[in-house]
Image (cartoon, rainbow, N blue to C red; front, side, top):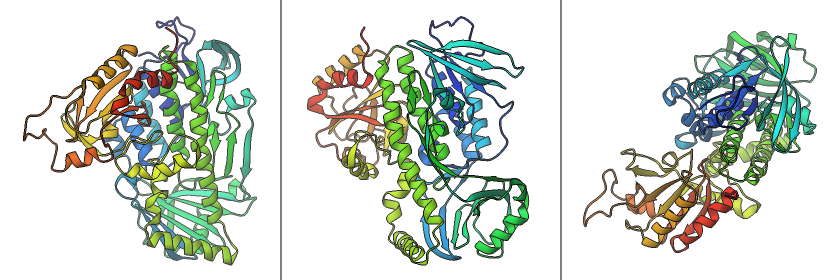
Length: 552
């Protein structure tokens, strides 16, 4: 795999590279995902060095799944602080607790740590970041894009690229050059944050939300001992007025009492926006992450949405760049990710407005609703899994959304993530989540059997699909014992149990499978299609449709 430190050099593949503008978490994810799929890239960032500021913090489980595939899992875990709960207070009185455990548990992993982990992955894959380089112009053509780049010394040069990814944040130059609007609103309050040590009785491995008539105060622990303290203040606060002393005053007024701030590492003021780009794609140019959508930090979804944007686009772009899928596949990036981003912006806006309520009747209604939802575990049913990124279902309409309630079960729902039930993977010789076991570099044809024998007609359908799309499919068979095989499994003899398949594994694996099925799983582990076994002959045609199969 190669990168494009010199984009004007001859390309060994004969294909133009992909230009990625911006080397934050979204740009680095895009670069790593494309490099590991054999795509030549040129990654640039106008900053001379990575930012040391903590910025984004909260990483939800689905994003962690993506990061673990790219970066060192042990390093990711070592730098993270798991968050056990969100605690909500009204005028200092506890009103609700969201327990965050198991598969829905997020971690605090500050942005510099994420960038360091992803940067190491890009380097390992043969890439690098060209720093001090900014984009100044774009010109689109039917089969390429001409970009003008300005180096750190002020020298400009132009080069041709197959595609351009704008991963350059809320003030995106790429979006500006495309002339795309960025519609939405800006909240009237000024927001302030301080990263400092907080001495007092609050649990460090939790997030605390203090709502009051004076505004909101949020305190959440960081790895290393400090905490992020975040608050809303009246409009017009000057940056130079944002001090540790001012934040201490806010904490005394809105917090539980007995908290002392000291030794701040970062103090900042900023405005909070809720905005969408009108389109995430313009020809061969794409907007990814904050360049396409921004919102309130409520719910901690910003970095998570950007990273999963990058993953969604990268596998599709790689297939098209390599000539293994048709260009219309790229249209689904805008369709799918606007669906996700609009839901995120809407939820963040609702939560932010709830934080800032002041009318007594509205505050009472909010507090009673939150308390009841906490007491009866209603947050666990949908809201927390949604925050965790586990309830994303690509598709249109209410029916698709309602089907997402099945995701905590063991079913394959088109548009949703592959279930994360445990299986015995014979390829790896260990038990792991099915979602972890399926490939993220290929589509997976997963045959879910009601028994252990693969019907000949299904084997023929799988062989035909592999012949039609050589190298693009990973064929796996999940039998009724909960064992995951490569291709057709050997049928166990009477009374035998596959190694690692515990008691009841067959009942778990087969739940919801009926007479078996053939499932087409995308490289991002979302289910594209599920067919009953007797319709396995249709899988090749559906795969052609999924890839917008180019003429050969």
